[in-house]
Structures are given as structure tokens and as C-alpha cells.
Length: 401
Length: 82
Image (tube, rainbow over all chains, first blue to last red; front, side, top):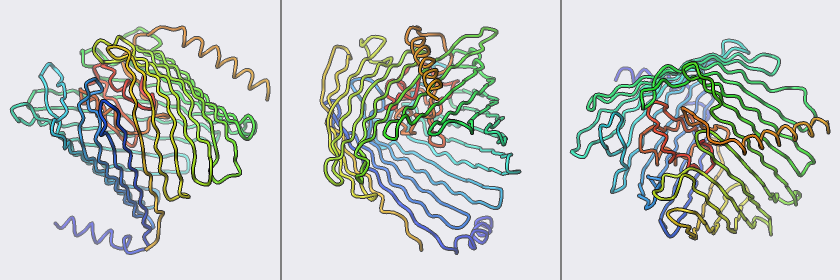
């Protein structure tokens, strides 16, 4: 109680100053013949004072909880409350997040160590982050997170499942467009009821480069991270150390055409064996036209390939063509290949999705859209189905009190 | 400038060809591309091992709990997990 009064008195001068209020809402619904009633509602609000801010984000979701067919839908609510106080070079960021699974049938969780099945009811996760700018170039950060998960077995015994994650590190931003980050992470999972405890830790050294002197309209950035792990996976094998490198390129070829490309390579160091663990490439070409109108029309063509222990491939086109004032015509077509866990569908699942839609934008305040798509996919056999997706985004703007 | 763009295009084409021809390799962890992840949480919802959490707007996979069932890969609307 005394601590609460002390904190209130401490915060009062900050709260008494001018406050700006911001809010937003996003509703999405989408359904097909398999599950016509899926949807999501996001509500958000921001209170901002001179040296503090409070963000509240509330989500209600009704979505697939298994990723397999037949689907099992689950409803859940997720609340995030994020508070930030800045005091000179130091910022303190306490936050809390909790979820509640509100469906009739709780999602099943397969427990480690062959301990059977449990049912998920939600979690609460308080956290505390502290950051400090020691100088213009050196930045310290630390964060602690604690999960208390509500997992119950069939006979309603609570598993007392908790997780703790501690993160800390330092970043040095050099004056030559490079930065060096050294960070450590420790994660502990335990459940007293099934006598499970696992701890793993990671040490990261990351170098990021962003060249300053490049041709006009060109952007290049790259980063290399070496992650040394200490811990074991679900088969009790040591987690391999990993070297991840990524390069991003962006070039505006002419004012209406820009090209993005990302290349990624991952190497694992596993018990004296060095092997390529993942390579991927991604490219995106954006063509903008009718740029004199309030809403610019655009055609985006994209493609992506990745090879790791699985293969994923993705290619498609998305277009928005402005017709009149805020009204635009939408069209998307996409093909992707992923592995699948659908029984009998084979190791890879190929999906082809395409369809037209319309969108209306009310200035910067609201956007309403709907799109009808056909999906062709090879589940147990080749199947086609139609689906409808729609959304409303509402942003009333901010005001000062 | 033009030479630079041409050189980049050639490097990109070779790299993509190399990836396309390459078969699956051994890997001990799934990778989340944080450039593409939107933090929508669909991967977290379908993970049957409680191995995924959204932290600061990105999906984070716990390497000690992940069982490589690939449901998150199949579900991710952005193709950000591989």
C-alpha cells in the first residue's frame, strides 16, 4: 500500500502535465466453407505525457488453433498494457500482458517428456525493461519477463507452468554507419507438477552495417550475428551455435519503380560439424502509378525461396487500382509451398489463392475493404474453396487534453 | 551505377538459382524472419508445444520446446518462418 502511494506521488507531477490521447480500432473477419466465422478485433489506445506514455492494446480473436483439417476454432482475449517512463538518459518500461482462452474447447498442448496432454487456459506475463544511453554511442538494455501459464490436465490439475526470460546487453553505434551489439539471454521453463525443468541460454554478437555513401535512391544494409547456445532441444541434443547473415538492398530504379531484395544465409556449428542450415532470397518489385491522386495505385510483384530442413516457396502479385476518390479495386494472386501436418496431404502443401476485392478509404480516418478469394490446395486430395475476407480500420486521430 | 546494379542482379540470380537447386539440409532450429513477421500470433495459436511467444511484436521460438511439427510454417500468413 505504501509503495502504491509512493509511486502515485512520484508519478503525479508527470500525469498532471498536458496529455495527448490517441486511439485506433481494427476489425477483420474472414471465413470459408470450412470455418465461416473466423475474425479478429483489435482496439488500442495511447496516453502520452511529457516524459511518459501508456499504451493499451486489446485483442479478441476467433481463429484456428490447430493448423490442421478439420479445424478446431478457439476464441481468446489478449490484453497488453505497456507503460514507459523516461528520466533523462534512462527509460523504464514495465508492462503486463495476459491472455484468456474463452472457447468451449480449450487448445491442447503436448507436454514435454511424454507427460501427456494439457489444456491451455491463458497466461499472465509481467515484464520490466530498463534502457540507458551511457553516451551518444553506447546504449545499455536489460529486460526481464515472467510467464505464469494456466495449463491444466484432464483432471483439472494445474501444471504450475512458469517461464522466466532475462535479456541484457550493450550496443555501440559507431560513427561509420556500423553498430556492434553484445547481448545475453537466459530462459528457464519449469512445471512442478510434471517435474519438468529446462534452461537454455544464448550469447549474441551482432555487427550491423548501413553504408552512408551510396548512389542516390539506393539503400543497403547488412548484419551478421553469431549466437552461441548453451542448452538442449526436445531430443536432449545440444542446440547448435548459429551464424546468421542477412543483406537487404533497395533501389528506386525510376521514381515509379522500386526493387527490394533480401538474401539470408545461416550456418550451424553443431558439435564440431559446420553445415549450411538455411539459405533464403526474397525480392519485391513495386510499381506505383496515378501518383497525382490522393490514393496512389500500385502493383507489387514478390517472390521468396528458402531452403532449410524444409523448403518454402512463395510468389504472387498484389494490386490496388484507384477508381474514384477513395474507392479502389484490389486483386491478389499468390502461390505458396510449405510443409504440412495435414494427414495424407504429403510432405509439401501447395496453395494457390487469387481473387478480386474493393476498398474505400475515408481520408486518413478509416478504411473499409472486402476481398473474395478462391483457394486451391492439395490437402487429402485437391480441393477448391471460396472465402471472403473483410476489414475495417478506424483511426480517429489524436487530441490533447 | 549501372554496372553496380547489373553486378547485383547477376549475384542475385546466381544466389536464387543456388537456393532453388539445393535440397533440404539439416537444421536444428526454425528461423523467424523478423523483417517479415507482423506479430499476428497465428503461429502461437497453432503451436501444440507452447513453444512460440510474441515478444515485442515478433514471434520467438523456444528451441528447447520446438518439436519441428511445422504447423507455424504452414500457418504463417507472411511466410516469415522457415
